Length: 368
Image (cartoon, rainbow, N blue to C red; front, side, top):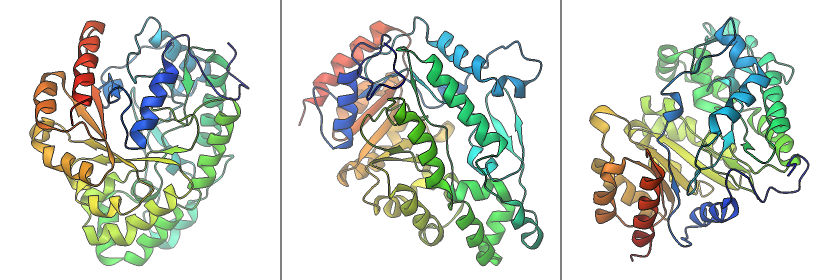
């Protein structure tokens, strides 16, 4: 099946139950359960646990080799199982600060991530350095990575749009953590200028990638690996918000969130830890945010069982919630928690484990 140019993808050779699983995801967005709660057999950030060897002379060359990246993804999914709501999705990627780099500046590349070099050291002289262009090297490279992915996907995998972080996190990349925190104490006017610049072109950038992918029949999806065949999916986030007060988030972060989601049909806010969760009231005040991804963190923030009250609160607000759960905690979690509005992410080691978990979750889903 040649997927490019299709009106809508309806099947994948690597995932025969694709349509049924997509329906479970859509039901979750609508606050409903079909036959069971959706499950993704994956742990958050698991893709960054190990590096991959490549024939390139530099790490940067490896990141930018579009043919290699698409072929390497295809090799990585060969023989892989995609049970439940786990999908084979290739996301063109040059790191989490790509959107900041679209406006100028440079990045350093490591094996599993990249780092942006801040460019605003002095507002009087450096704001002019922020110049968005769709002729920017990183912008054009991500377009190339996307186009090559579409050429190579066949009926084996989907292609998503890149990880985009406008707003607070983009401003953080340009200005640096210490400087931006200081700005919020003594130079709020310039901080607001930076936040405005960090939001101005987001919807245009999103449209460029969305239009390219939808013209090829692709659903809307990105790093969260949840395909939305009919609509526009977005994963808003503001990791920098863990450093600021609820009042400052309402003043600076909330208008950005409202702008980001206004043309989207499906929004999952990425709540990265307890500091970001301090702003949950403001986040949930935006009706377009239908769902929350809860990332509890590690060390003293693990396991998730200590955060059940937060999950219950999100459920009480009739929002979907993604719960990243270890298989060892699954039984206790299901005993203590309602299945309402819940999408489970669980790391597993075998198909046998996955089939057993699906049966358990199916029973749990029927409980009232």
